[in-house]
Length: 221
Image (cartoon, rainbow, N blue to C red; front, side):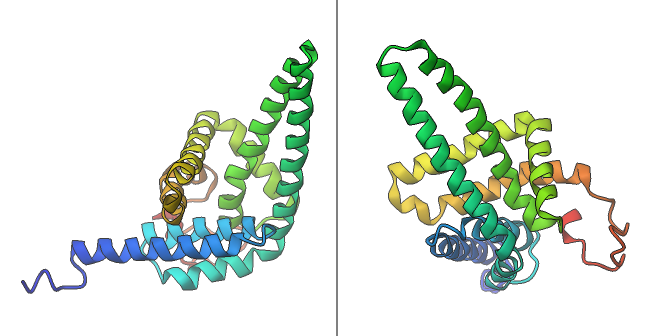
């Protein structure tokens, strides 16, 4: 009985993580409402999942808002770019679809081209938030790094896209799932993304860009 009441036993540890996941998922939903904050909110979601849920460092709410505020400016710009890109792709697909309805072969060809473009854009944004959460880079380099990772690690990108689509489909079929599926999908995706990240990061203890070697390198554990 004494072991069961111990707050560090497996049951309470699991329940604590489950509660943290629910809280950061709720914060993510609320902060995504303005739309222009989707990227900084998703960046904070990924950062908190990896640092707090997986690495068991610090506190969920504290780390979520720390990441959100730190990446707000760049993330908001990326959000606007993503929204504009989504609108342009929607218009392009609508136009191509109308051409197919008129039985014009060019419509089918355009749809094929737009699907490739949409896949590349989605691939960039699948990596963009994790990259933004981990690395301190200029605007252009974040885009370049996200594009590079998404194309170089294509099998991983495809699996990440499947996970994202599963979260969207699951939330559509079971609307209440929106309160847990995004964070669960982020947790699952983080195992793939962190494996990619380790290929581009210095070994633990090595300084990066003049940073102090005493820096807490929790992400390398």
